[in-house]
Amino acid sequence: MNSEIIDKRDKDEEMIVECKGKHLCGVCADDTHDNYLCQVSETVSCGACCGLYNLPNLSREKLDILLSKRTEAFASVPRTEDGIFEFQRSNKGPHRLSRPFPGFHHCPFLGLIGGEKSRVGCLLHPAATGNNGLDYRSLSWYGEQACRTYFCPATNKLPTVYQSILMQTIDDWYVFGLIVTEHALVTAYFKEVESRLGRHIVVSDYAENIEAADAFREFAELKSQWPYRRDDFPGPCNYFFENGLYPRPGVFRKTPDIGLSSYENILKELDAGFSSAKEIAAADQLLDELFLKTERALCDSPSLKGGQ
Image (cartoon, rainbow, N blue to C red):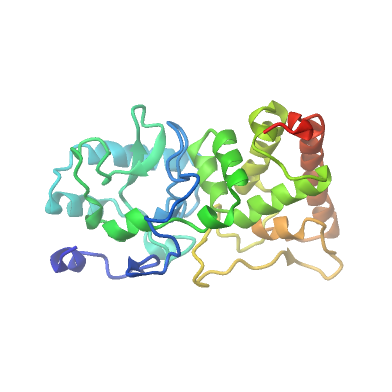
């Protein structure tokens, strides 16, 4: 990236990811990964590391509209530095200080890709429509190298079997991107399931079991639909970079009589907050019922007999 391009960057943003020799991201492009979590299928992908969900008052409908309009607008942009920078200036979206995490850049080159425009992706990628195989990611905020080499912590921290279940079970990019970066939440879910079953889960537990897959999708939906949030809940966006800039606080309890939950780890990762003992009891019951549904679905799973 030349100095002219660097000078055109918006200086009020912070650089969160930097991969220049010393790979602060912790994962490099020449590492081998069993699963590629960024682009999974025609309808499943993730743009969370590009700040996809770091928008105020986020909803699926609003994000769909934003990405659709942005994708349509970019189709007519000349593939020149001036043309692309002009698009960037006119498509920044909400000011960074209004975002849930002000120091986390939201890339204006996130759009909808694929033949049916049915998943999220990078409009500057060489495979994107209109780019004729040329890579324009050097014109983005993070730059081509970071875009090519960064992988979120879930890539290393989620066991391969959990990753595979996510990839085979979640069929929607919006839900997938929200849940796949929540490695602590996903791990807590599967550990609870394994504790109840008294064994490790395998991919076929979910790939071959509609009821279990439905129960997991219901759990994943809690990321955006959880009813018991703390007052300073930042929205569904997760700041998963491990630099300590925005640590996730513990479960909020308004009064000292609100006791601990057997699902404390899950509640923390859901940004839970409670104003009464009655509320946390209701939250526990909600999770109890969800895990019981999963347990019942898997009790006759073929994997109990050695299936894979």
